[in-house]
Length: 638
Image 1 (cartoon, rainbow, N blue to C red):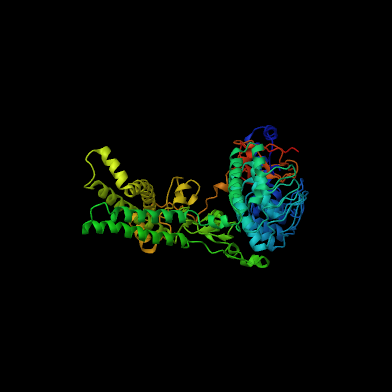
Image 2: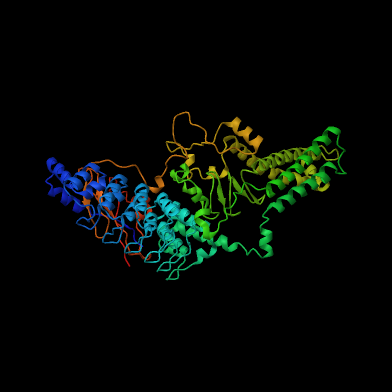
């Protein structure tokens, strides 16, 4: 599967530059002459020039240019809605096809021009129109990582998000191949078939593995099943084997581990599987109970030790009561809902009305900000920003902290206070009971004065107390360390999961790219809110420094949708059956020109090149942007 991006050889640009003579007047004349056609005017959105050419000089906007492309396509490519409206009003056909069978709607998907796409669709453009390769609008949007555009045409215009092209590849195949994880989340959320095979027998996971797109593989595996990892292509290779064959070591390691973990999970009908769902909670409960019994029998009520005074007995039994209270909180923490987000069950026949995402306003700030990571392809919900999907519980949890195997439950918004209280009580109980046990053994009046003899005496006369002290010693430091970590995080209103993924979550980065917790209101307020209500609200703290960064603003660097470049010289270049892109960058500063093409040559046996690793190089940014000098052309071989 070769990329649909091509870069025109720089030698052609240099030849064009030398033919101009290098004079400044020639550059101006060339620029002026290039503007004197409806196609360039449409691409620039120059309404004055369009009116002059159409109304003054009688130029037609319904005819293709010399290379077969229409003025409406140029306007659509660069999201020139006003120019597109004018062109349509003057006789352009919204469904006109170029020599590759592509319409203006296809071109609008390249840069995610939602405004011009909405205009075209309202004017009668066919959302399911396919070009000569079978690419529909959803294919093009997936190929270029235009998640917002894809969401718009699917949710409002019922575009098919799972339609295959001529080679049997769906938009999910293309998104996986290109490594656009947000597109993958949206397509899986819309019930795209993750196990669909193309003509080579490859599923989307195969293509993600071939290209070494680790995040894409992670999303697909999380939303899939064990069978997805075992599917073979026409050559008999699984995704992990293909990744290894292409030297994608990190992906191969991940897929291999995922397969081993899934294979260890037993069928739900087996007794062992039903018991394994209890996790380690029963074991921990038994350990605490045995230690309590040992402490009571061998320390407090030991017959070969002196009787306790009233004050000592109160302290000794206080440890028992605290440990017992800890057991109750342990039960609450283990059995309580940690904050599972309710699953949105929907009827497949009425999916367009029932999908929680599709019910949301198209102008929702979270969607406009590109926070597609809030989509859960497994639970089919749009989760809050701080909620995460637990692979063990297979549910999304609000304010997900971590999954604790010792309580056999997630720690989240609704049970974190119980968990922290359990830790506090157990640490205090272990400290008190350990101190009492040491004091009781150390003050035994029958013990000899010499250390060696004392050790032998304690081992023979108080074996239960010695065993309790040793166990309590090791458990105390482990639980105390966890308690300190949890207390530190509560004081800063941050979760364990967020601390572990601080570099991945964009909402934890400030304007300079450094760590910034927008939910930290200070130690006092964080602690009081947590202790009173049991959790902290997900309300961002206003930054008095004036930095407008937050989850409601655009942070689309992963999708490589950067602000428009500037420049003045413009040249048209073509390359085979590619779209022609006008390069607005200054011809003196850059000699490279770029185009894009949807290729039909797809074979996973070719060696993937390094340009596929960078999404920014794989997204043609159209008018005024280009792909950069370091872009390399991807070649395909069968």
